[in-house]
Image 1 (tube, rainbow, N blue to C red):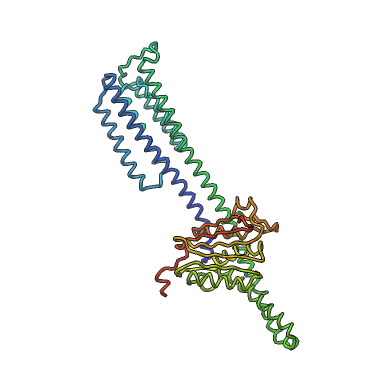
Image 2: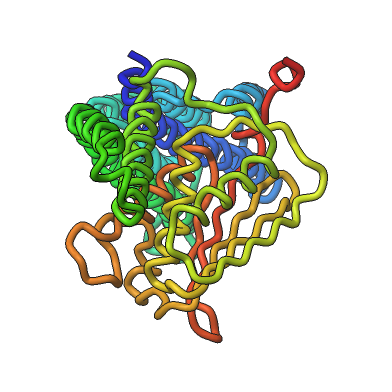
Length: 445
């Protein structure tokens, strides 16, 4: 059951991440509305001061300032609320824009209604709603702004402005319309561009999450296939073990040193096959016991390299461990296989020489594997970790790095690959120590 729960966790993680991307985009859009509202406050204060003080036009300043104070209070409350809360729904964006429409309607009612050239600011609200809100919300904004416009034409008092169009640019009404158009255009360009950037970034992040979900689903299928194959291999391996044991007791083998030596080698390789099968089942959570082992970094790495050196035909292996101050950690067979995959890839590319360096950098464990092979193709470096990307030109290759990248990503780490100037390639595996560190209580047990 533990294997099934891990699979479900893997499949649910991209969906949760996708939801986080949507919430982040909504939060950024809300922040843009708050910024736009502050611009509206500054614009209203400036316009009221110029019209009342500069042109001497009578305005109900007390009521207009009260509306402005309410808008400022609402924006401060919004800023405090959305500073801490990240989840923003369509309904909350819709209500926020309704407040803006109500504030604009109140100010227009107090300053001439439809005779006010800033009446066209309603278009700004409609266009922003079309970009930010769902379809039903946008049409509701359209209906509300249309009703407000019609209502202002009936109940508001005209603004005492000289509306003689033959005066051209000297008409205050024409000047007001030009200013309103410039404000609308500038705000739309700035904020629509920002909102579009948010949407493009969210779409790109969602595309990455979909790719990650597909890759992890591929890993799940591979894990199920490997687990099934391990079960099927258990019986023939046990049979071979019994047969080899019987052969060792036969006089023909006991009296022939050469056959006995070959028999010993066969039993050694068979034991290794059984160990690999047990490791697969252990990683899948189908074996008894725990797959995680409490140890230390240096003990784990030293033991892994000794085991890998003894089971692979490597000519020269350089192992440099620069980790000072051993640290209690918990390693499992999955991480062990991940490191072995990187070493195996290096060995296939460079059978004569492989090097592993280990060191600690801040709160990360760094493992760097280098070889003297032909290096990575440019396409592989551009798509590191994609399945079936390999320079070995053999079917099914390229899964090693694919698994390595996904295991590291699951642990919060990264994998980087590069070609060396002197020839060969290097793979750098970075893992956060928090993902493998043992709890203090566990380390004392």
